[in-house]
Length: 154
Length: 94
View 1 (spheres, rainbow over the protein chains, first blue to last red):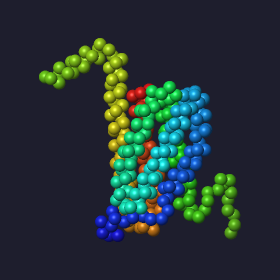
View 2 (cartoon, rainbow over the protein chains, first blue to last red):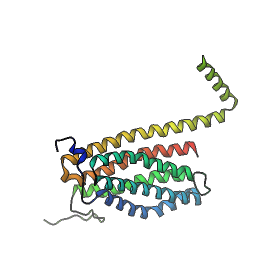
View 3 (cartoon, one colour):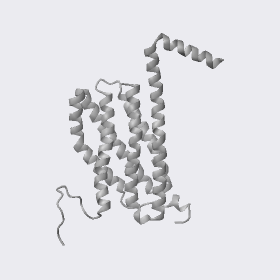
View 4 (cartoon, rainbow over the protein chains, first blue to last red):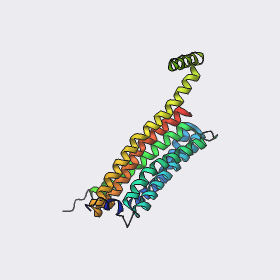
């Protein structure tokens, strides 16, 4: 691995951890989306609810696209993965921009609700997943318990 | 001299309709804000992926852990660009 060219020609096979991470986040997103839609409907009304649902879908699509790009290009080469992540960042930002610009004048859209939902969903899902990932990295093989029971066996 | 004339014309426009001038300035600065907000995360993502690729090439057995951390790092860095984008849409369209 000391040859610099190997850095760009080596490829990764096997399971794609980012796909598993994204699958977790999508499941949690589906759980959290109704709550966010409800909160947005209380604050901004019906427009807020539809905008919030649209924002949740946009964020989850963004995560799914990122994971698909990384997992598919990592099987080809690490150099391609690096390029795909960087250009993917631009493309995904462009897709979000295009999606918001296309719907901004629709009658069912509330831009403050959409903006808040995009930020809250993105960061919320990430922190939720980070809690799980940090626990599994710190204590591999242990599933984080929700009840907080202490292991007292000696 | 030409630049001075442009400044005088701009000042006259602002004096004639301050609200329109304020809206135009907000729209123009929203574009700059979005562009500037996307630069930092772009550099950050490049750095994260570069270092992750280096780590995976050195220690292929740790690739799974590195990829997980890299993916979360990319997503967190991208949140900065999304915040800039939301500020942009609120300034420009709301």
